[in-house]
Image (tube, rainbow, N blue to C red; front, side, top):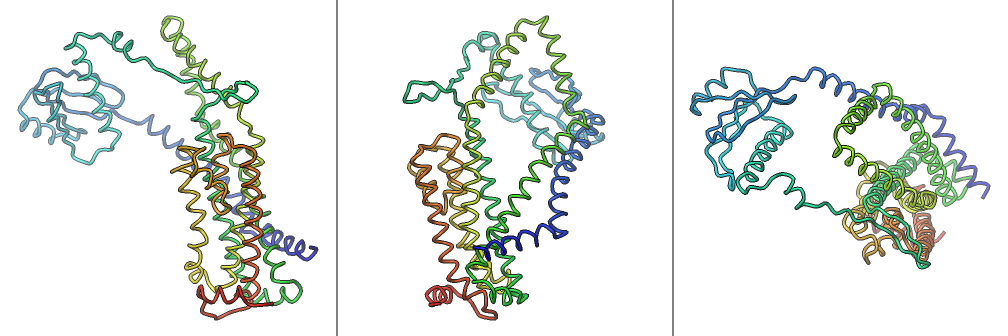
Length: 443
């Protein structure tokens, strides 16, 4: 055990004291605020210098009226289509909009002429303007006013409650739980894959540099493999924690520096003024405040402490399980290129868990497919953290954890048998048959 601890210390200190670790640990958190700040600066400057796009409108139906906005300025043309095209081509304006005599129940034949391919947002904005006008015309035709139409379309919002065996009611929100499961599942997938590949690369580097021949003269190959896995895991956790702290602090500071909260305050002040003169606006604000209060109530019911503990457990369990397999692959090959043929079978179960997150777990977290994905050790790191926010029976969670530990011990044993032979082999053409031979070889 003491030798494994020495290996862990060696792996941890070798990586933490490297300039590359210090640079990436500090640089990565700086990159995100820098990107946010740069995009915010560009967005502010674009908003300040933006000019309305000029659109020529040839309306043969005489049913449409367009008001200028900060995005578009409309010029009405009363000419033939050919003449309108010539007038438009003589300018540097954005577009020519042609509206023929059309049936509002089947509006076809509307054309948009531009000199350059426009963005989907601008095309969508123009389509919305036309659709809104046709909507109003239909209301007039059927003699329906807007207030009556709104009354025919009531909005129903289901308030969710979980009913416990004791009869206690706890508020719930599927949208929040979906987002939480989505984010946690992706994080597990990314970090297990990234740090697993780091283990493989570290083993390859030591094998090719012949350092490993000196090390294994003092420790068993299995101890070396286990120490390397745990050591790199410690580096990953340290780096991840630093990133979370720095990114959160620096991103908040960057947003505050560019005053991105100021427009929100201004909007609130304007809405407050409007509320004093508009009872409907006040009612809408009261309803919005009620929704915010309900949202905060839903958040308070989520067991974040339990979720955090489960996340850390499955992060470490998944990392150790796949780290052992990546270490075995690294010990068997002499280069990153050779490792690619063995890397895909190792990552395939993790990929299945990732795809299952979207196909089964987030759609039906309590279904049979979700259950098995969260129980099988090779897919449970991603699947269980995606399910846990929806509520998982304690016996399922316990079974999944026990099987994950058993899976880690199994993969470590299998990888250790390959590692003890492969780590000392160089220049050997490796195949699955050779790996099986190394696994069966007696000590």
